[in-house]
Image 1 (cartoon, helix red, strand yellow):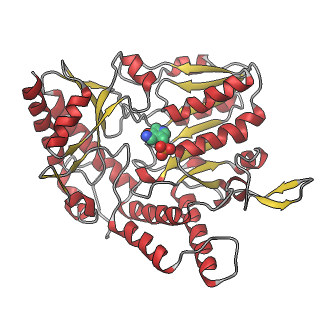
Image 2: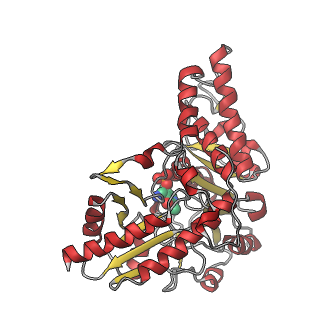
Image 3: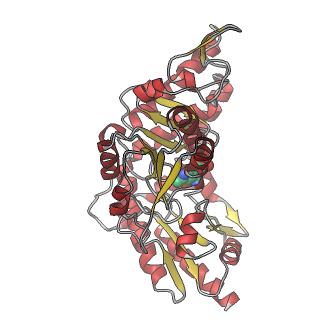
Length: 419
Ligand code: PMP
């Protein structure tokens, strides 16, 4: 696919050739219940373009073998391609070195790695861990497990009625017992973009390391881990047009080296005797067993694809979709948008007066429209807004303005059925 240009100032959808992009995504041609698929569940998983599918087929048909363990032709190719994928991820987030990129099975796995590798070694009884109300369960539950095991304490940053973090409260939470910060970059439930640069800088005044859950940020904006100066950054391929089963943990080399391994097994060792095991260097120390080789190579192809379009172009176009969708949906009586932060990605969580979110999802599905309904693995956010669940439309760069129109029409149909 050729690169697509967009004027960042222009509030004109035609500057982004979305039809040409859509032609890369075979699944968007599907009909669901006799209607063209309108896929608005991108925050859960985005779709895969043909170049990534082709890359997976090429790997499986001409390059597959296990890596790092043999000198034969296929194993050498597979090893090189896997290492190349790591370099693509390094460049994508501007990490200093490729050994700072650990392939994991996804964001959840990456966070658990930090909890076991860093937390279990360095967090002690009475230490405090700062999290926020916006966290996904995957950046809450591992820390609760650690807190239970160690007798550590979790402190939570509150949010306001717009779904924005209370930064004064965040800063007030710091004291000499604060030992770790876990922070979501972009809320999957609301779309709020958090001011992580400022928050990281503040934590570092107390020499506290910061883990950023970037699952919802990496697909939608340029990430530069050196410029952000975060200590850890995690995301999953399947939200970046790549395969399921793979993600990365970025960690500063000094921290990764100081950490204990999370999983034991093959490849993560330098030598093993029954008396003593010496661990391998990073990143291998954290990649026990056969890694997701095919998925990692597909992840690399997805990074190539997104980079060709340009993350800044993607962000600008998606912002137009967000503004348009916010305006159109706000005009429908009974629609309440939950999460109206000044800085947002293209996620609209909403409720409809008198109608349960699951009923909304079911009726929209009859029209071929895929939205997600539920608590979005962010129950503390639902509790804060006193709703059991929301419906969530989440957009990608291959969505069209007409997808927003279809959603608005679908919501009116839902209201006719239930009210
Ligand atoms: N964090 C956030 C913000 C997410 O949106 C998700 C996925 N919904 C996760 C973590 C977990 O990602 P995965 O299921 O790929 O491990």
